[in-house]
Image (cartoon, rainbow over all chains, first blue to last red; front, side, top):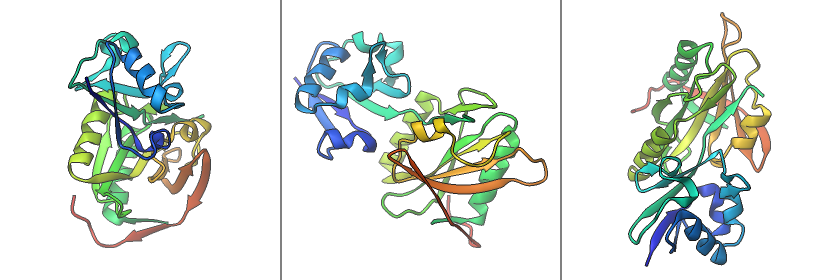
Length: 92
Length: 140
């Protein structure tokens, strides 16, 4: 079973420079646990105590996972997960 | 140093003025690895706020995929401050996630002049850089 996770430039320090890694799991949470076992530290950049980090966008195929149940979103073989840090900022 | 055409600089400023008093934001894409801003991509500020900006997550996915398909990178990430100086704020620095990009800040706090400055933001460190404005227009 393989699910591709596309990694943004700024997080490739955790993947040895790889633009994408593979993993498996029934939900996004499982998948991230699986990937963490080979790329330690990556999960903490995506998840905090409250769930998926607010300023990191995670997409399952063509949809934002916020609308698919977040960490409990079901994933399956052949899916692609894309991570993009939010582009944001402000006055302060 | 940021090298940018006058045409593109004018587009950024026009976008900032049009959205004032909300913060305006966008990207200028260029061929990957060449540090050449070419294709102007104004983005919607999903926050619609005078003090915060954020790219809509689906629009960002579309634009980033398009850049990937076209072998481009975000050469410039720009946004405006509408009441403060054109310098990266603490949140601008905290959320800067494109280490290869030039972060262009525009300030529309004065009606008669627009501040236009460029910075590199890498690992939380801000370095202001010179801007060289070229006379040629560039293809979009």
